[in-house]
Image 1 (cartoon, rainbow, N blue to C red):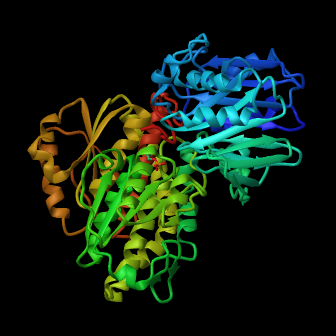
Image 2 (cartoon, rainbow, N blue to C red):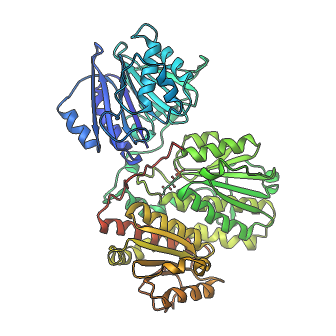
Image 3 (cartoon, protein in one colour):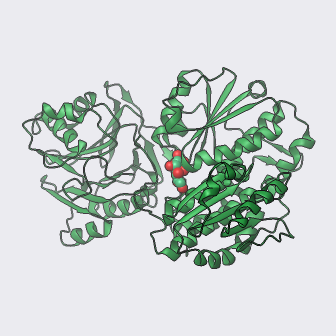
Amino acid sequence: MCGIVGYVGEKEAQGFLLSGLKRLEYRGYDSAGIVTLANDGKATLIRAKGKINNLEEKMAQNRHKDNIGIGHTRWATHGEPSETNAHPHKAGSIYVVHNGIIENYKELKKNLSQHEFVSDTDSEVLAALIESFYKDGKYPLINAVVQALKLVQGTYGVAVVSEKAPEEIIVARSGSPLVIGIGHDETLIASDASALVGHTKRAVYLNDGEVARLTKNSIEIKTLNAEPISAKVEEIETNLAAIQKGGYDHFLLKEIMEQPKSLTETLRGRINSKNHTVHLGGPGLSETELRKINHLIIVGCGTAYHAGLLAGYYIEQFTPEITIETVIASEYRYRNAYIPKDSVALIVSQSGETADTLACLREIKKQGIKTIGIVNAIGSTIAREVDGGTYVHVGPEISVASTKAFTSQAVAMVMFGLTIAQAKGVKSATLRPYIDEIARMPEEIGNTLEVVRPEIEKIAKKYAEYDHAIYLGRDTAYPTAMEGALKLKEISYVDANAYAFGELKHGPLALVDDRFFEMTLLPKGVLYDKVISNLQEVLARGGHVIAVTNVEDFDMPVESIVKITTDIEIFAPILMNLASQLFAYYMTVAKGYNVDQPRNLAKSVTVE
Ligand code: F6R
């Protein structure tokens, strides 16, 4: 979603603002803009609709050596994507960039008649509101920002500069992240630490309800109620290689292919292969607390939700007397659901910033239920607000479509389930096959990717003309099929839906015709014969079936086969999902769409 950057220091601000905005491109946007201030306060505002390249072209004709500035990539919420609606927004001498939504902007606007509004945005209202308290420099800028924000309902990450104070940036957050980078004689800001990588490793993450005044060599933080806060400096762990394509054509392919490594990071120090046990330090639950868990609620959106569904299927296989409910955050936050006291909630999020997931976390905490984060982005809001957590450590996921995070989220949650089972005294013989397979997964993922990639590239070309697909799976292959369908629809715009194989004849079987192909996930296992009967039903109706299977002597008369050669059995569906990920990737390449930044979508969904 929208991105914010800012710079105050001794270098040309335009350089960092442009490179920072490019780093944030992956989050999704439809216009961009910057404002810089000269020493005498003279502002240069440059905005452009569309890609950052358009902004860059305009900047090239308007180079300035100004040492302070703020920038923004906008993902339209109020008002269409246009240059006028792009940030920064101006009111008097004030310029504002804003992420989030000002819910009461209409009401606030009524009392701001002194300002002539030019855009359709809620953010311009914020700029005008700040100016109404600033009175053209009569009061300190930070005071004006605080007074304005006290009237605001909604969410914001905000950065403000004024022509009257060309040495300072004021930033504040409530529900939309902001990180401050500390350099030598320079202070940087970004809504996502990836924009700071290569500039500084030292960062201060702003908390909700905090506002900060930044100059090139000072950071003063306080709450909106004027209580001073001492800046907690943390290290940015991401390196440059992690946010570059590393020789791949697209981030998505890079991220799919790096799963042996990313899963290794998820497992590091957490599996003892000698005594076949799992140890997770992060959740911070004692053996007694783990033993008492009788109910798990798993909360997430999109891919994170699918990872939760999949993990739920596994955990109930080996953990006795536990009920598991995996829920979609945007639904759950408005349900009047009863949560038993002996529950623990797993809050699953790659970005750690998803608004709906965060709202559920806060709601669940209010009910006194322990919350455990399954998060990737270190220092993110969810990671900081949960009671304990397990970082998945997959490194930055730049492509909008989530891939490596899915695999690691699912495995991390299964490991959490294993720690519960261990505490509950489940026999080692029951748990050992799970633990041993998990330990071998990075290598098996590497082998599978290598073997299936060329095959899938060919198959995807064959199906590139299709616009409709049905994904089918049963048991643990069902959530996997859901994830495969999501991947295909979000990047290749194929209308793909997943069904549980057994549900086919209750409706979806009616769809089978020449407009559709069927992606079927067929792992070995106790339900295999039943799944084959379901498959027969599709074939009998002329279905165009792709079979992904680990059955060596698979001989059904399907159109295309992807063989997964492995002796992994329990987690074979996760290996099959690699095939779905690659299939979505190559379909999208064949269709000629933007792989890493699909239309209408954003990487981190910080609005409801
Ligand atoms: C799909 C995808 C989304 C995210 C969802 C949750 O490829 O990326 O469905 O999984 O928006 O995002 P996080 O995990 O950041 O909470």
